[in-house]
Image 1 (cartoon, one colour):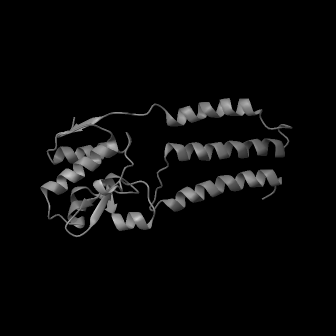
Image 2 (cartoon, helix red, strand yellow):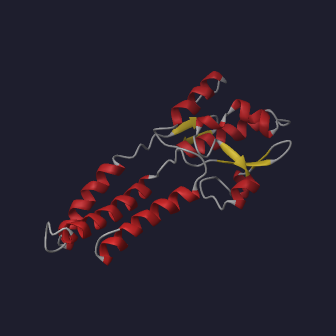
Image 3 (cartoon, helix red, strand yellow):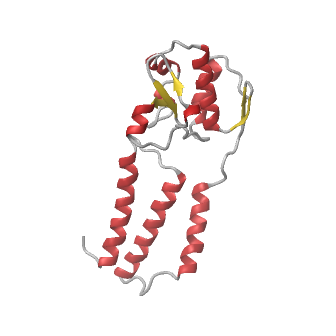
Length: 190
């Protein structure tokens, strides 16, 4: 790469962050969380400032207050307004999306106590939640040090052949397919 050391360092920071995120997740495509998007954009913005100086477009970087003000506007645009819809399922009231999925899967297993991992996958296929799946075997989650699953003892679900953890990464962009499965199963969610 041709450029000043500061510019190359700034680029390396962007690349390191992207590699770290992509190495933490299995599968393709990789879903970026809002915080990950913001982190990458912040690093790209710093890199862009270094490029401006390095290319002679400007003699100095943006003043810190201008950079922070501009970046906070970018951050707000990325995060947007969070969807805080709450759901009711049986005796569980005001559940967020992740807790709703956990409650539904727990309920389904309680009503089908002999169900195996593969049988549960037929009901709630991995495709409903790309990358993570709706659930995973707890030993796989522990092995990969995943934080994207409900892993407290009370949240783990025992199947006939394994114990699973339900994914906690649900939002407005991915909950609808799960809700459609619930509707087909005749589950009442409001």
